[in-house]
Amino acid sequence: MQVSVVDLYTDEPAGLGVPPYVGTSQRYVFGALRCAGHDPIWLTIDDLRKSWGLSHERLNLTVNAPEAADVVSRSDAVVVIGGVHTPGKYLRGEPGTPRDVRRICGEATGKVIVGGPITQSTMGGGRMFSSGPEELGEPDLIAKGDPELFVYRLFTSNTPPNRTIFRDYAELQDLAMAGTEVLRQMHLGPDVVFEIETSRGCSRAPFGGCSFCSECARYGLPEFREIADIVDEVRRLVSLGATNIRLGRQACFFSYMAEGVGELEFPVPNPAVVKSLLRSCSRFGLNSLHIDNVNPGVVSSHPEESAKVAESIVRYCTPGNVAAMGIESADPAVISRNNLKVGPEESYTAIETIYRYGSQVGWNGQPCLLPGLNFVLGLPGETARTYELNMKFLHRLLDDGIEFRRVNIRRVIPVRGTPLWGARWSDKAVRRRGKRFVSEVRRGIDRHMLQRVFPLGRILRSLVSEKAEGGITFFRFPGSYPIVVGVSGHLEPRVTLDAFVVDHGYRSLTAVRYPLDLNRCSAQDLCLFPGIGRKRAARISRARPIGSLDDLRNALDEGGARESEVSLLARAGQLA
Image 1 (cartoon, rainbow, N blue to C red):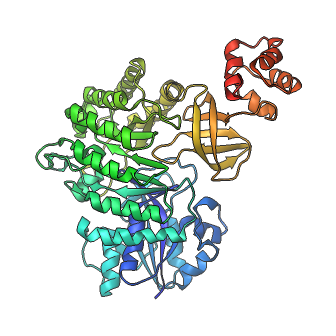
Image 2: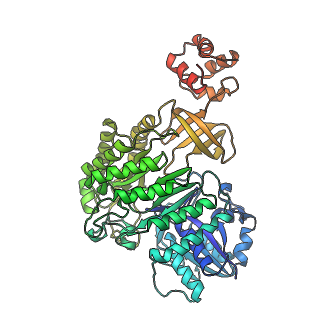
């Protein structure tokens, strides 16, 4: 029996599976089929887009891409996993939509099973909708619970479960380990990041949780995966070629094995256990080891324990880590109405704590650990005043010198089972002020913060190229929420190089290769430097060869260049 798995990519509040990230559910389903005695074929939606003659990202293609359409048409069963609950802007991986599922259903001759967030509700074409059989092309089966357990029971008993089912961690481990075999069908590179699950559920479930929280609604109280199981999966992935790991599939990393779960809304972190987990994972010599979500209520309620956790992250993980915090809103009225985690003062304390312990710069030019701020627009109770309070909060952080990696702003998406599902409220404030708020954050906050976090002249080491457009190649670090770095020139994907920061956008950096060969670089490279226009670039070109700082200074003196501009160029070219 031939079975195939199609990865449409997933993006959830507690898990990212859009390239270059490889999600968990997809791998688990692959493993479930192997545990059921099958040898599944792995495809991505980009494999199918290529076979359909559509625009696609070649970095996301698998070894099976040349025959992707034939695989789907001749498979006895096709398992499709996808869905987006937290949509974003993606550099090189566009998630599949129900329209893609409908096409797969139309081309498949065997049984089609659909699972993942797309079976609950999802985003597509800029709107949110409930995903029923009709929207998904009438697949044979829809896995409403954990698709991996659904698939395993289906293919071992030949009978689909008659209810929504969820697995526990004892059932998961064999599926997760078998799922690592998917690496043999991927084109691995230095950019690919594997999400690893550490827990699921939320400690605030007994206390109501946030109005939009799918973790509370779907899983309830947290269940924690054993350290040994996590480390075994990481070990196996590394043996098959993985170099980047993100402990990202959880609602709050600081709450891993915390004390008081079920009794306290914000349980007490367990620094010793977290240290053991991170130390064990760090021994594999990974290119990047990062975390993801952190509940600001846990950090602000238990600053001493949280500080110890932060210290372990700085010590055992690689630089560039981001503790993504769901601030959601700084408006007390919105916070109260939606039962959000923390108020502005608690948020401030949590952000300042992470910054204080993680702001030192690591070997690759990135701070070791910074907060990442998440805001949600469109919540019940929002008014124009909400956006004013949000901006006031952000300016307070900026004025106090507290650094954070990024501000993520998204529209609220009601998910089935949450208090917001089916609710009605006015979102006039969003329509009037939402776009303006985003623009104000990008212009008034983000660029200033990037200038602090990645100042002019910062050397960024081991960037990996992903995409080239219009004479610029875009690079990123593998890991959590990496900064996009534009470097002039057209380079192939998965090239690794060092770069020198010369300018700041709202959400990206401009850099040149480091060290910059001043005797061979293009005029375009020179013009990227502050104060160096076409005329000064031409003077430098005419003065070649340039072998010293004096040579460079002499070439630019006639043009009236300032010493700061000369110094920056000299540092980029490693001139004494």
